Image 1: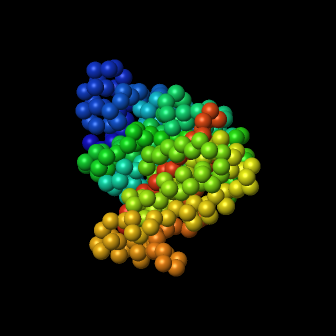
Image 2: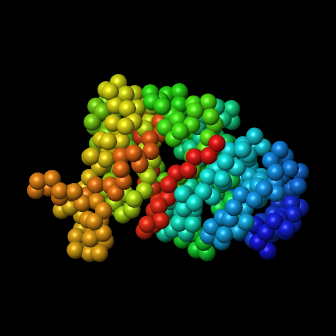
Image 3: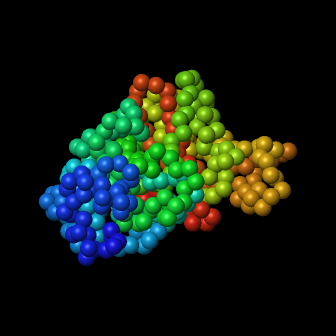
Length: 351
């Protein structure tokens, strides 16, 4: 029996005692390994609210199963979401089903990438989605359960089970679920969603296929030191930006954002600096005679005088910048994008 066959999902709704859940949900591999909330009929109806459960959203890879709003509500209940979180979950599912995100690649890749949601606009405050201290960590029900609901949809509807549909070599803890909000109040620049064409008062969700955040700790207040730290993490010999054209995400902490802003840097100039300085000397890359290196050269090689170096195979405009985190320390993060050959994974923003 397939979880995503609409005509049989009613069979899931009667299991509301620990023994039945253990025998049915866990044995059927319809969890992420953690305890779940039984999706009784009453709970699913509360989760749906005014949403039309019979609306077909599309088909979800890698099993290409039909995805109805009802299925999303079942997984939101399993994840422990509150009903008021459901519009964010539903928007997130609409985003990951957009072909531009390339969910088929994100689900089946050997890369450790998963899906991360970024929430912007009034909803992040109304729902208490964490944008400050420990935003990638524990402690906020909205962040934890919204991100988990997306992952459970990817498992239960899409079929992204380890080895069977999810071929990630290493994975990462964020694959249990990843959802953050932008700290718009601490940002000296336009919010992420405004840059993507929305009004400040719009509530939107951006879904991105990315790896775990790589922490960048730069104690200096010198903007060049901060930018060089970010550029060095963005481009390395193992970076996906060397291998493929993709859109990375840079999360700048409020302390770093303040130092950059008061020294005259805005998002366009930060992007340009990261692109100009996120380079690798060709002599520092091993295997220069192999097929991979020939492909890298074709995409990334630049020559200035006697210097040969590799630059990210993206444009400056492809680098996404979000201001988030607490004000207690000088930390930022780089999240490498997922890509596979020429199947580009692009962030998708949905109201």
